Length: 287
Image (cartoon, rainbow, N blue to C red):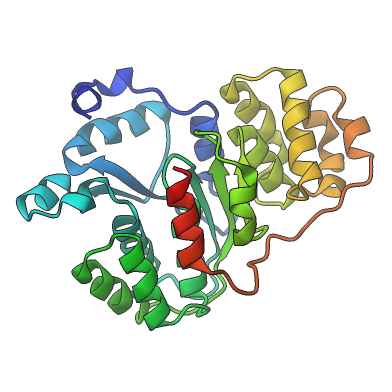
């Protein structure tokens, strides 16, 4: 933590492909402007360096939320220093206030923490599928302090309820088993590279096809690995092969033959009901 805090902005390395993907997602179109909301577990003291890093990388963002670890230490909130559940979920719900039911969201995280669970709980909470009592129990099990729970419930009352979260991308940083994510449904999409996420988003019309080559270049993988990534998201039903087939000029050699096969695309829907207490316990046990 100390070494990271003392790094210069120019020394900080982005995850391969993340910078290019963020730049492309942040571009405005006719009559619309995407909103990029970053919730980071980095301490507030790193704001200046992180903002400089984002400027260097050319990433436009609307909000950068950082964690007040110094304040947590002063108040003796030791588990809040390492914990993410009681920090990220209240911030996500608060960030949703005032957006309106029509605004859709795509979330990005990794498996180094429990982002997949946090994001899924958030998605079901703002959709009205989780009640206050259940949400309180989940937050408590996630290590949240009582004031964080109260703040989350208060913010949720100000949210326009909607099935707003369309997809949750989780980069497989620590190699967690894919089976761990299955109870969360096809809305959660584990990927090994951000190029795989870009393929899914291009197939759903949320990313222009001409953005794919730059994201591939930023991901640092070759044509063979790009094809493997494409086959992986197609085989798991996350990418729409029929839609991607029309983007052949922007794809690597061999993509057309791969996309021409029969693939079973699954819409990114939320599962009927998730036992989040059991899922949370499973994620912690395998951490």
